[in-house]
Length: 298
Image 1 (cartoon, rainbow, N blue to C red):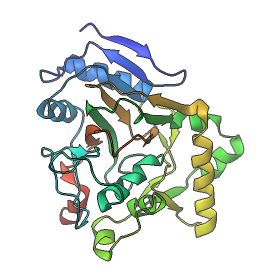
Image 2 (image 1 turned 135 degrees about the vertical axis):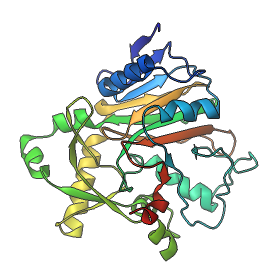
Image 3 (image 1 turned 120 degrees about the vertical axis):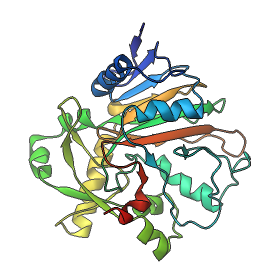
Image 4 (image 1 turned 135 degrees about the horizontal axis):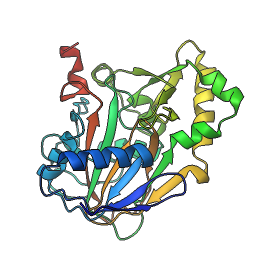
C-alpha cells in the first residue's frame, strides 16, 4: 500500500489517500487504519468512492455493525437505504428533500449539537464511518472535537472531580435540546438511557472525556448540579482550539472514534441543496444488532 497521511489539525484528524475500498480489507489495511485511528481519532479516506456494499464490508472488518434502531416514530422515517446503513441525509425515501418543520426535519436538528454517536446505547460504540455521496456546494461541514486534548487541558482540580463519575446518556434529552419535543412513552421505552463513565481510556492509552449533548445527568448528583457540570464540560470542549471542521468532498469516507471525539453537523441551505450522507456505526464487541432489539438478548 502507498498510504499518504496529511495532518488536518494541530491536535488530531488526518486526510488519508492510498487505501482501496473496492476489495475486502486485508490484514495490512486493518492494522494500518486501526493505527491511524488510534493516533488521529478522525480519519478521512479521501475519494473512496465506495458503494453501499463496500462501505458495509469495510466497516465490518473493524467491529460488529450497530444496526439502525426502530425508534417508534410514526411519520417521515420510511427507510431508503440498505441494511446496516444510517441515513444522515436531508432526503426522504423517494430521494426528495425533507420538508422543513416536519417530524424528520425537527429530529435531525439534534445533530447540530456536539455529541458522540450512540452514547445512549448500552453496548460500547467504537467508530462511525460516514460516506459522502452528494454534498452541497456550500455549508454542511462536520465539526469534530478531540476529547483527549480537552481532558488534557482540564485543571487538576476538575480531573479529580470527574474521577469515578458516571453520566447517564439519553437520546431524547439531546433531541429535546434540538427542538424535537414530541416523544411518546413508546419511544422512551424503545430507546432508554444508558450509563457510561465520564472519563475513560482511548485507544492509544490517553485519557478522554465521554460527554456531549446526549449526557443528561450524573449518577448520584442532583439534577441541576449534574446538568450544570455537563454543560460546563461541553462548553469547555467547544472552544475553537479543539475543533476541526471537515469540508466534505464527494466520495469522502470520514471515520471517527466515538470513544474520544465529539462531532456535530453544521447548517446549510437544506431546502435548496441535497446532501446524501450514509453512515455505518460499529461497536467494540457484541452481536450485530439494533439497540432497540437489545432487550430480547439481555
